[in-house]
Length: 84
Image (cartoon, rainbow, N blue to C red; front, side, top):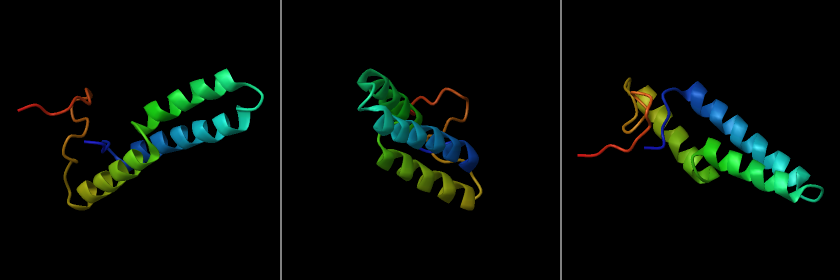
């Protein structure tokens, strides 16, 4: 469910998320409100915590290695959870 359409898209989300986290840490002493906003950006880009992003990367890589889409990935662009 945390997987992406492609490994490249997942890595791009990771770069944005981890970059925003690093910038938040750097800006926190001078501008705490900007740091809080950047943490929100990071959480949105990582779809939760860094561990969630890592699990999604593993799911994406394993699905691609098997030659199919990851279960619960954004096949139609909606990224909604699968409902029975």
